[in-house]
Amino acid sequence: MRNIPKITEAHVYKDKIKKMKVSPAAQIFSHNVASTMRLMCDMGPDNIKLGRKAVGTADFCLFMDILFDSVNASSVRAMKGKDLRSTVTANSKHISFWNEAIAVFNSMTFVDNKGKISKPPCIKNWITTLKGMKSLWFKLNKEGFKYLITRNINQDPLECLFGQFRQLSGRNINPDCYHFVNSFKTLLLNNFSSIKSRETNCQHNEIDTLSNLKLFLTSNNINEAEVPIKINFLDTNLIKNVNKTNDVSDMTVSYIAGFLMKKNLSWILQCDTCKFELRSENITNPLIKIRQYDNVKYGLCNPSTNLFHFIKEVLKICSCCINDIYHERNLSKQLILIIEMNLEFTFTCPDHKIKDILIKKTVHMFLFTYFKNINRILRGLDTKQKNNNDNIKNMAFSYYNTHSKRYKQKTNSLNKF
Image (cartoon, rainbow, N blue to C red):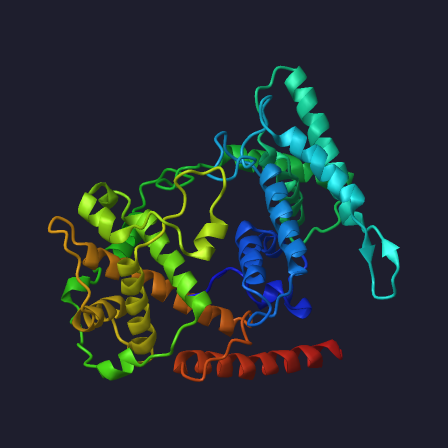
């Protein structure tokens, strides 16, 4: 389990960054990256390759995260901890923050390797965008508008329209005025005449082909209860002696335990016995403390010591057993069964099956994250974190290295022509 799971090599290495994608920049300039970077700086440069100079980078990432929130709001109500991720109103803090952001961008300068000072177009464009947002809101507010959804201020509809123009009648990439008008009329009529319902055809007829196809797709479903589960008797000593964790891993496990408790067990915390066993009032995890929003009273949950060790043991068993049973059917059920056979943790509440719920949710999260990392390796997004003890990841690395070389050779041969 990773501390910042969305960050891959495509966010860091220059040759793997997708230039036409906005999501890598938005994921780098995020609260999670900023808080984790600040935590690594506070832990000291002895065991982490981050010095105190990275504090400025963390502050800049947090500034850009707030800026993205202010210009990408899609709801009237603000999210917890993100006051500016809401619509612009007369009483909101958007205008004051945009004024501060404009001052920050005006003070920015870039220095290259030769010592030359410059201000790239992105800084000037940000200033122009923020000034345009302010001017647009002042004009709309004067006309009687009560709020402005900043996410709607984009050119996506225009790009989609021009994309449809190019696709109409073949690859029409450079239409003149005559073809543009005719294409617009055609698209307008097609959109008006198209039926939006998924359950009906565009033309009403008596043919029952779609009905038979629907019956074919929905019938003969395999009942999971009928699939037998193969019990794997693994060596419990291997599970107990699995790889040791460090402080950062323990903080990540504690963060995951708090997330599972808040996401899936919030209704159980009304029980005094469960609340005493699962939740700790004192936040001792530095990762939870630094990721907690200041203006949110009940945000992240701090797990108890008992819950932390329980989740840690579940993840340890999953990591140890996945290489032996990854090819089996009902993988999650098999992992749950193995955990129940080897885990001795108990919870005292007689009314709630906390152990069963936690095992099920943790196993599902582990499988989702694990195979997501495998897909990243196959796509070449994570080729540095190689684990010699993980056979599946080693096979994924081998597959990527073999096929990526073939793809590069094929591309180079085509470029010669």
